[in-house]
Length: 517
Image 1 (cartoon, rainbow, N blue to C red):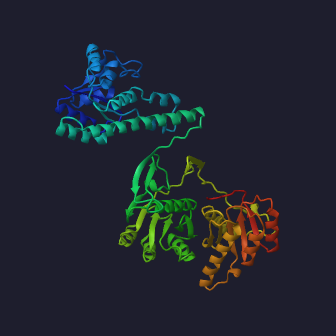
Image 2 (cartoon, rainbow, N blue to C red):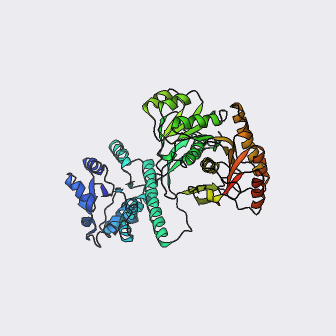
Image 3 (cartoon, rainbow, N blue to C red):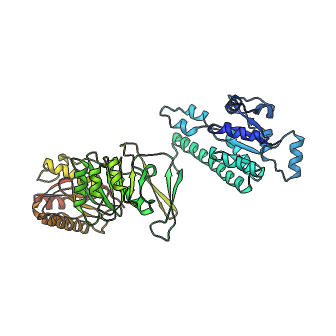
């Protein structure tokens, strides 16, 4: 008679699985709580102590670490010497193992977890049985995931045994199960011990992508096991075709900008840079201002808002070609309007604000860069003013808006804003004067289209890093810029201050840089 060994923490479907094995003529060996569950549901079992001839000791810490267990798992059926040794020692083969491990992750997730609690939820016997069975996969079926129960039963019914390729796949899954478990324990213990020279990352495949940045590149999207807000990994897609590699990159950049704002806000984004962004009294005004900031670049872009997308806004967006629209929720009316565009991707995203620190990982040739995400930002205040001309209350509001936006523009970055609306964005130039020229030219064209002269508007400028020379301030002054926010910190800061003073510009130094490469 064939034997199966059961010892599970996740008891999903285990009664049904064991019952099917019994119907097929198998004997079931079980430990502790698993045996109690099976017996209470009418599944006859053999207790592990009956197999080992030794009681569970040390509060259950030692119960399966025994030759009669591991000999039955590791003994090779094709070697006469193994068969003889098992027979000589009264050891019977175990042909199937159904084991998953103590819930260490759930234990350490508790806010009040102690070292003692964590240690007691480190499984020893379970991983040992899993590894033994997985090593001998040519003869032993190892099952660690309830999702595989049906496949095993179907093959046993059809073939009398599991297929060799199935056992190999189950073995690989088993080693993955123990590797993930050990990695989780190692990471937690190393943190407790103050060790940080190793990096452990665990991500699951969310989807295979059609291609990467370009059609000749293969790509996949992996999701962290720990869900976080403002994440595409947990977003719910309500409409449209699959996301591409570039879609995901751009959408992630848009969500990082949205996270900065509490007031009704909308951003349009292309190639990981905002092309139009605005706050408003409601989401309709925010969208209208963001769209009017750059009607050309928004074509084929991504839009994100931080309020429920209403039918009114949906009707304004519908005539425009957009790749993705993201919101914390969509009204039924909005979905009725937008779902008529079959390719338009609609993503419902958790936008819950959190202050929990998050890490950013960037791969490089042969290595990985790791840093804290740039989540914190200093609010510009009048006390930061370094010029003779002081900021007005209205300017402070726009300086705050500009500072939050320029943080998310590729360096060198300059933005020009007015009344909570971007008018010009200069991104990724090799010098800051070039970025300033681009932002100012765009603002000039946007205002001219509305019949306005840029020199009369009293615009606000934001820079992600200090001005190394006074030339950017001089350029700004020529076009009527009246307030500037920048980090400061250059050895030539005084040159910029002097240029601002000479032109009646108020300038704030935040003391905080926001490079974005």
